[in-house]
Length: 244
Image 1: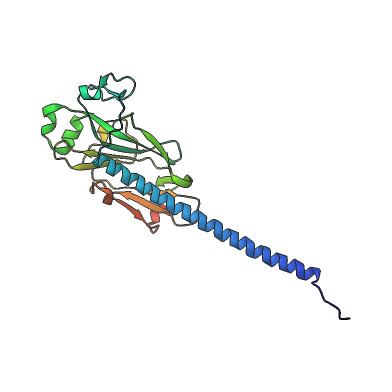
Image 2: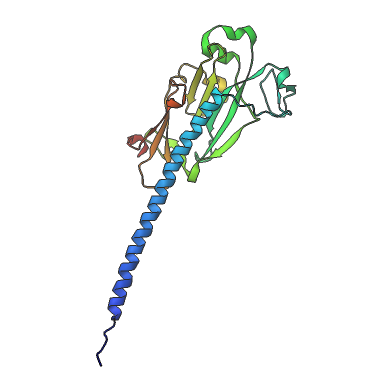
């Protein structure tokens, strides 16, 4: 009878070690691919969020209910307001986007902007003067808090990308020319009125998007001089300001 030769213990151990290493490498590759895909989705979703607010400012959405009120003196739209919308001088001017401070840059608040029609005062002085005459405030009837996908964070794009971003974007329709005007600020102003300046209307604002991936961080830039969705661009991760 012939003698059959089996595997030695050493051969079995070597096989298991090699197979385990290959499996570990496979899992690392899969995990990295998933993280990269999630990061790409978070970049796209943030850009889409900004674009949606531009479109909402161009095409005003009536989300008020019958119980919503507006104060024609202060523009307040919360529980302290007493006047029906149709019986007041309140108007919707556009949209505001704010990265919420204190939440590590992960949450964005969006809302309509309400103003009070000043009558003949809005007919002179150009777009900025007219918008200031409306004394815009953030509405409360449609305010939303939106978390970025997959735990992504927004940080500054000034060589200190670990610092959480504070960002405000104001998108308004001029009551004089009917044109859209965009204003940006790397802070959360106490009064939206403070943002309606030539400086805020020309200042590009950039934020880095940070996620759980080794991919180069991408940068989203808002150019207020382009008052449309084309004013939002994404840097493919080549900007050094986001790699610090």
